[in-house]
Length: 79
Image (cartoon, rainbow, N blue to C red):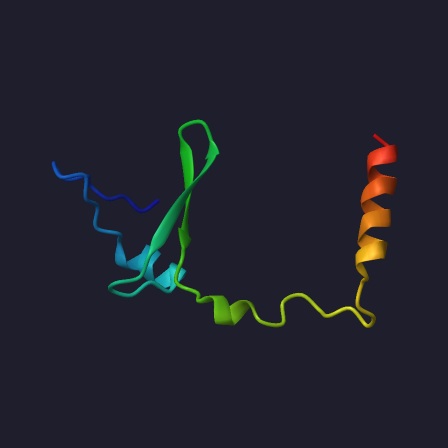
């Protein structure tokens, strides 16, 4: 297990092993996500929006407003 010490200013130096594993460099952002009460996951928030391009495939046929409204009505009717 890798450990670090909290300073009086609330700062922590992230150990080299962790920085390397997360691909972090000076100036990068990190996020803390609570997974359970008292437990957090550290996430590297360094990717730009550009890297998300192509993650969702395009539909072969565009969905019309009428189709969207019908889907909303159908979903509401099942509740």
